[in-house]
Length: 167
Image 1 (spheres, one colour):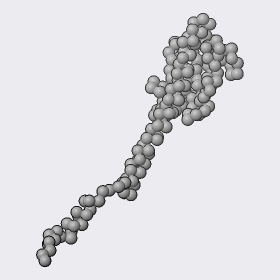
Image 2 (cartoon, helix red, strand yellow; image 1 turned 30 degrees about the vertical axis):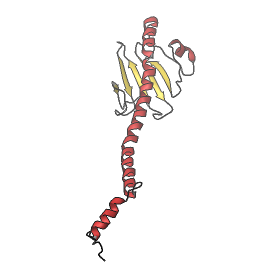
Image 3 (cartoon, one colour; image 1 turned 120 degrees about the horizontal axis):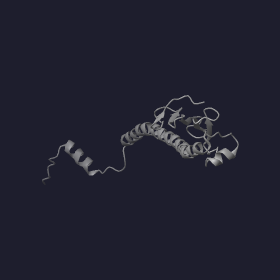
Image 4 (cartoon, helix red, strand yellow; image 1 turned 180 degrees about the vertical axis):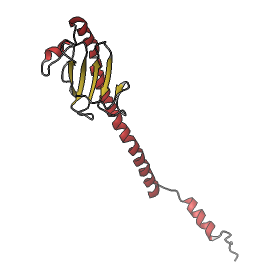
């Protein structure tokens, strides 16, 4: 009896058997590569996100004190001097349309000298990611406002002098 001759080499048989197998799931190497990629992305993204959070907190503080500029200018036009507020008393803050404690920080409004037209509005952060940082708007006698902050230039708002010494 004649038998059919096998014309395939052993290597061809192995390749054919391998092609017929279907891969199910991921290999360990593929999973390790995915974990490494996620680690690299996290190493880049987390510090950037933290800076974003700090920058937004500083921006909120600046917005809180910038809103007072109009009220202070009105006070100067009416009273002839920069207002002064005393910590713990609501009267001065109420007249300017604000409160001393903003929740994440405190506002201090002080003239440069008694009866002066110049002064400062200072916001000191006492909570959150920028705790103990300060931002300040200063008005000179000519009515020019300048901004300064104790935070680094990386997170300081545009137009504010970063790394300033604020008492």
